[in-house]
Image (cartoon, rainbow, N blue to C red; front, side):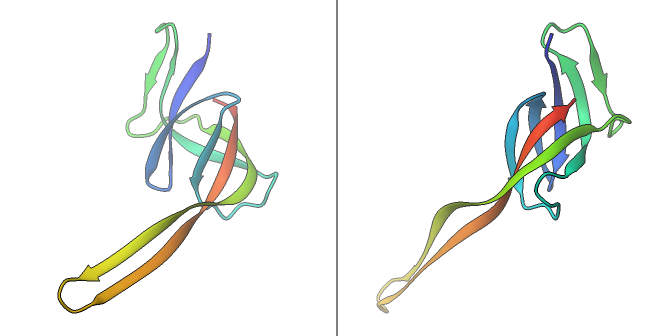
Length: 103
């Protein structure tokens, strides 16, 4: 029986289970440190247990910071017709990889 949980991090929600690695927005924690994330829903794959927070659950999900990485480059292009104006810029977001330890 696998326990799943929906967690909240950086204004986004992620569906996770134990042993899973996820990539979230940059967090201020050091590599190897443990982090507690807020859980919204907790359920199993067989449908026997189901907990819904109002809006959050009391139990939190524990994760470990694996690494801080940089995301793929996003190309941003601006163009104005008839004036020969073109601007091209790039952006790479800073991300954190987390490994879920306990749901």
